[in-house]
Image 1 (cartoon, rainbow, N blue to C red):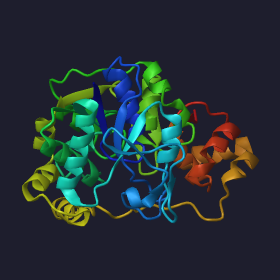
Image 2: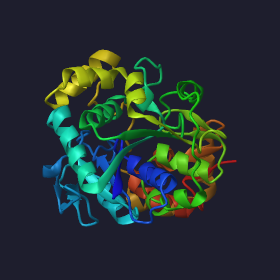
Image 3: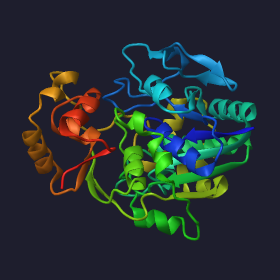
Image 4: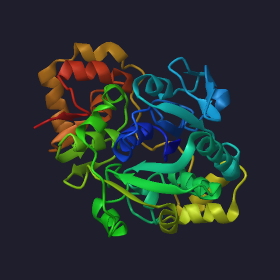
Length: 351
């Protein structure tokens, strides 16, 4: 018997789900992690959740479609999931929301039934607990869709919220108020270290920030969207019943009421409630095509650090994703950037 971990938002969330799984259970077996293949625009220019037809080399496992290191996204789509399947000690299953809420719920139910355990939803940052009106909220749709789909399964489900505020969407203090009375877990360094090979190249920010906080990093961090602060609260992993998480989230409740039959209809509902387009790509600059993946090796280290300190505007650290952008490099240059600047942690320290 094994629990099913559901990475609530896709992208780098499987990394956070692994850290959570290593914290929640002592089971040495690789955890089952279900995730959207829903990436940042610089990774996948289609800017939508990918489905089975978008990949080659998928397999079947635990009643679902699974990623392997040999999986490939069909161009023009791109995906970090094959790399995560290679570098995370976990089994990654694909969630395909294209046919709407009920279909997604059936996928999750089949996975949980095959695993033989309960569902554990993992959200790094805390926007799964959105009320829909927070001024810095950017992407409430995916997490709300996950909550609603898990609620429809009827399978016992716990929601875990890690790294409060580290995705830059809801402030830490506000989330602490919503989690009043909850007694958190704190991952050990070994749990975060298990994600180290993936964080060496992946452009994740929230999961990287959580891992860095677990390893003891504190202070301000410049991310692509804003500056966030690593505090003594940042390493913690909070948990609450699914019902209470849904009670916080108006989009999840509306999805359960209307049960849209397509992804587009579900996204439109979220847009009506929050004013934030559910399927629109991020509104931020992508790196230019002129930047070459290997060019980080040619950087002058002192000049690069001066550039990053100026761009970070006084922050103690920068994420690797932000560092690549500030130096006009693509995300695929992250490994060579780390090597060129002597970084061996999920963040680059500037002070």
